Length: 354
Ligand code: DAH
Image (cartoon, rainbow, N blue to C red; front, side, top):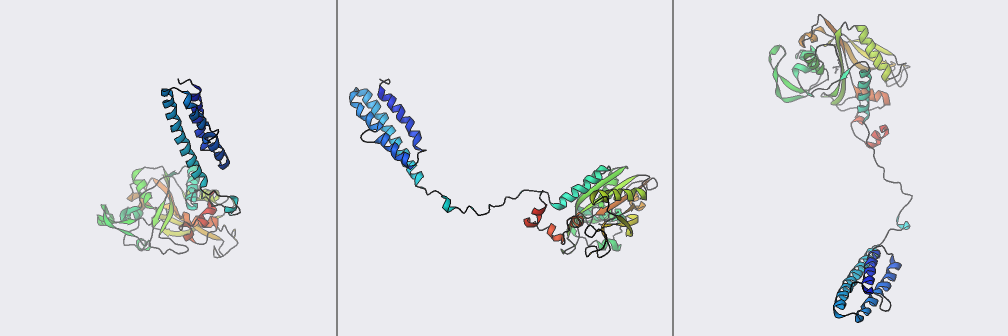
C-alpha cells in the first residue's frame, strides 16, 4: 500500500515542517492554514482520505498523520515564541555613537629601543646574551674591581636578598650575600670566565637599586652592557665603536663627546654625551643649557678585572660600556617623566603602537 497517493502527500507534508522555522509572521499564518486548515489544509485532506483505505493502511497512515500533526503544531508554537521576542529596530540603536576601541598589541617603547640598540651592535659583530638578575656580591662587585668596603659598593644602594651565595666572596674567602644586581656589568665577568677572546657582547636586562620612584629614577630599570675583548683593542676602537652606535641610533649628524670619568672596572673611564636631540646643541632646559646629554658610562677594561676573570691581562685589551634604555627612550621621544614608561596607561602607550 505505500505507493498509495496519500503516502506521497505525507512526504510532502513532512518537508513543509522545515519551512516553519524560517517563516515570518505572515508566512506562518499562511502555513498554518495551508497545513492544518479545517477546509483545505493538507493534513485535513489526508485524514479525509483515510476512509477509502483498508483497515491496515488506515491505521498506518493515520498514525503517521497524527505524528506529523504534532510535529507541525510544535514547530509552529516554537516559531511563534521565537517571533514574539522583541527585536531591535533602528530607533533602539544610537547609530551616531562611537564604536568601542579595540586595542592592538604592540611592542613597549623601551623594548623597541633595546631591540634596536642590540640590532645596531649586531651589525658590527656583537652577540646578545642575558644573565641572572639575582646575583652574588662576588659578581656584582668584587670581580669588577669594586671591593665591598669601597664607597662605590655603597653608592649602588643594593637590594639584598635573604640567603648566602655558595661560592667564596673576594678576599674574605667566605660566601657573599645574594642581591638583586645593581647593574648588568656582572655579565662581563660571567662571560669572560666562560669564553676566551675574541669577545663582543651586548647584555640587555633589568637592574635594581634602592632609588625613589621619581621623574628620573626607578628602583627597577633596564640596562644594556657592552664588552669587547680581543688582541690589540685600542682606545680608538672604543671611540669608533661608540661613535658608530650613536650615529646609527640618533642620526649621522649627532655629535658625540667623551668626558673623563671614573669607574672601578675601567681605566681610563669616560662618560659619553650626545648632542641634545631637542635643541640640537643650542641649549635648552632638558640639557640644562649644555647642548649635550649623557647616555652611557664606558671605558677601557681595567686589567684587574681581566685578572679576576681569568683573561690574560698582558695579552688582551678591551672596552666596556653601560647605558640605560629608559633614559634613551625618553630622549628619543621627549618623554618628561620616566614613570610614564612603567604605568601601562594605554592612553600613553597607544601612541607608540605601530
Ligand atoms: N655599570 C655602570 C653603572 O651601572 C655603567 C657602566 C659604566 C658600565 C662603565 C660599563 C662601563 O661597562 O664600562 O653605573
